[in-house]
Amino acid sequence: MFSTNGLMPHGHCYLWKPALVWLHVISDSLIFLAYVTIPVTLVYFVRRRSELPFDWIFLCFGVFIVSCGLTHLMEVWTLWHPDYWLSGAIKLVTAAASLCTAALLVLLVPKALALPSPNDLRTAAAALEASEHRFRAAAEGSQDAFYILDAVRDEAGLIHDFRCVYANSHGRARAPEASFPGNATQGLVEWCQRVMERSTPLDEELCVTLPEQAPMWLHVQIVPLGAGVAVTSRDITQRKRDEAALKRAEERFRSLLEAAPDAMVIADNTGHIVFVNLQTQRLFGYETSELLGRSVEVLLPAQELGATAGTCMSGGRPIDYFRNPETRPMGSRLELYGRHRDGSEFPVEISLSPLETASGRLVSSAIRDVSQRRITENALQLANRELEAFSYSVAHDLRAPLRGMSSFAKVLATDHGAALDADARDCVDEILGNARAMGKLIDALLSLSRVTRSELRLETVDVSALVRSVADELARAEPQRHVRVDVEPNLSATMDLVLAYTLFNNLLGNAWKFSARVAHPHITVGLTTHLGLSAFYVRDNGAGFDEAFTNKLFAPFQRLHSAEEFEGTGIGLATVRRIVHRHGGEVWAHGQPGAGATFYFRIPVHSVDSQSAA
Image (tube, rainbow, N blue to C red; front, side):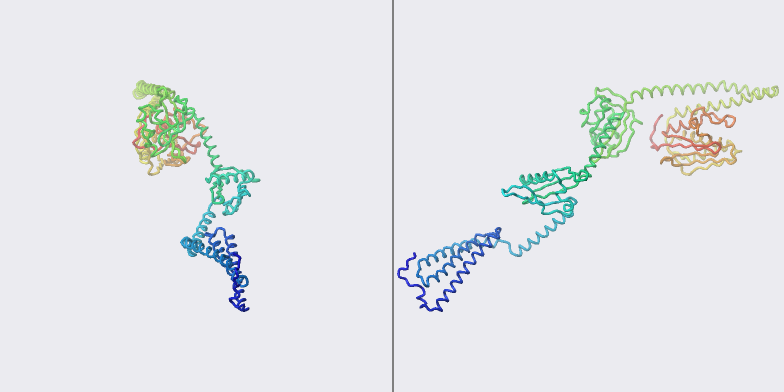
């Protein structure tokens, strides 16, 4: 290959003309230097841009160009040394490199054409910038602390720490090291390592303690993100405090329910039991586990399921009570019964109350065994009926001898009055006066008895008109008196009309009587507000009373004034109280001696078509 075989150097072709020889020497040398510099530059470029696609084509071009440079170097060499075989071999290598590079380049062109154009790259860069802007806007607008952490690896490629490369405003105010101090920081690193190893998100809550600060609860979410993780940290300290407060409140609520003297049953809006207290177990004979999740119907006899429609559960479905929930004292007007586990039935009183909770509406039921009370009430009702019958009988039986006493006294006064001396006539007058007083007392007793026995027939009563009618009757009975009676217009109440007349007749009659010794008697009837509720009042400017004896006002036969001062039976105000109580109300009074008195009473709002018997 290196044999010249008598060949002449290439310089002979140029006749060794110095100018021509050096022209070729300099030109080929410069080309060689350029061809050697280009591959070095390409290799440097490829090494610095390791992510460059198709980097191998640059190496192919380097080999090709180096080969071309060597052919030009051989052109200089062969001017003096006829090593044409070596020059040809180098050209053969150059030809092979050229063909391979050309072929690879042909195959590469479609792939190269598929690469994004500069416009595509600019569009992608703009989209990436907009996406990053949105990401930053969302991250900065978040109320949570947000971090992006890159994994820090050792020489063996194992993760031993994480480095924060991004934090939003909340994160910058509270760096991860501040959010996860001490042992919690190591725990965070371990969590991040676990997320990267398993490529699964992590969602945890932890309590951390900052120096000189109260413990803080954080809700931490970690998701894998390329070479690191994204960490979201939310301060849930207040939520944890609220949950703890709610838990304490629930515990107190349960303690109160457990301590309640009644059986407490709480059901959801489908009528299934969610809570019972210890009294429920004692009253119905079930264990708590046997009642939870069951319908409240298990506690009611079959006949009660229809009777309590609208106030209990029927068929395991929410019915009228849940559509229009309100506090309902069920036992006030209904005869209800509960069913013991052994099947026995007993009378109960049930009150219902709606409870609005975060999980939906619940209904709380307080159930009371009223067996003993029913026995007592029945005995008391029987005793009252016997006492009323006795009072009624006595009142009627007293009238006969009373009429006889009155009649004979009148005969003495009329037929034999002239024969009687002054003392005898005074005795006869005293007999007649006592007979009249006794008659009034009997009438009052009968009136009081009728108040107890009569059935309530509720209707809307025009109180203003009723009071004016009573005042007119009192004025006609004593035309010599001039009493000013002021009645507030448009007063009304839902009452029994007969009892309402008796009520105002007694109250106005009382005011009329005790204002008899006042120069300008004045009676006022109206409506006022007491403790936030409306109440009727009857006020006079008469004799008044000492409030130290208020407890005697409404008791039968109790009088605060002597008969010589003001006549009366001592039954009127007792009748007033009984009428008000029959309507479910209350009555009270205020007064001062010589400054008048005011009697108040409150009647609850009733439905006009509702009926109840005392």
